[in-house]
Image (tube, rainbow, N blue to C red; front, side, top):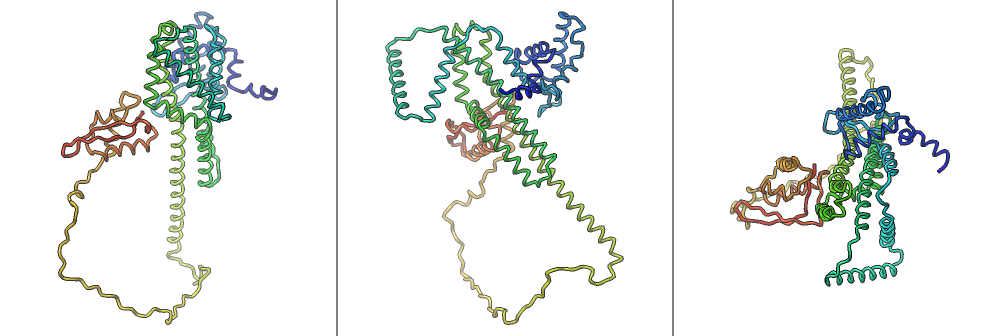
Length: 477
């Protein structure tokens, strides 16, 4: 790290927070309301109330003269552009402002928390993680095919030995230390993953902010500006971070992955070695916390698309307004000269005027129209199909299906297509199921799991039972 780079870091919010005289008070409050309570965002009224309680506690210990400003004044200062310790924003749905930690403050809290003495440091677990990652890199890159074959053969032999021992009733002795070590490492990794989501969301907010700035100050044409904006968005979505987040979201929203995670947590948290650990139950809520964090990132990405749509609507309105102003100016001038037309006859000039010449010999010869004779003896035709099918077409009300999805999601974070069909039986047959699939493919709040198939049973108009096999569809709020 160069000296100049370290000097520039003095303007970073993390450095400002550590260098502040009131850093212990700020970090203590942030840890109490965000980290300890596992809250992502806090409404403004609740935040002010907790800050008042926190100041009251400090005044009892340190005296009334210390930290004498009001709770709202402190929060406004921390959320200001000069500090950047908090982010104050209005959610998409709601009229009350909310507070959230910035990535800079979260990094400071994570760094400070690393000073606390730990029960033990899992050196073996981390070393095995390093080896596992290196093996995965070598396997995906296929650096040495022969070495990879030998490694897989060795792994295969080890697995066969373990299977033989288990089938023979020879179970390995349980290592309590390793179990605790692996569990603590899993909890730390999951917590760091939640911390990283604030940075991912911040990156998408920067893209949205840059887009708004380009729209406000750019003098380029609409086509050039949109090309630049969509290029930036494609660069974010196509970057390693964007691809990694898309892969994460698809995996965490998979019903199979959620079921496996919940099953593993139930088994592991039931172990007596794990129950004795402090905050062992916090890992159980990790699935819902990850889904909520990922949903906030998706909402930030959706705001960018909404901003582009508003820009296009505004530009179209301005162009239409300009055209109408030009037409009105022409009409006013026409009315003004209606009673006093120009005195000279040639007051207007038309360029590139040439005479229209028609030569008689270029005309085509007359050709009489061919007469079509119809046979009077026309018999009524008979079709080889049942025409009643043309009058029995079914209309699928897409708006009604969307309302059924919304009702099924009431009080829930996600619902599957099978659950929707159980609550609202299929009435229009296969056409209704295809409409559900089309709605899921066009929506950002739905996931189609092609690897998992479900079967839905429904009746036709005659009451006959039918069965349809289609991919699993998950709708989220």
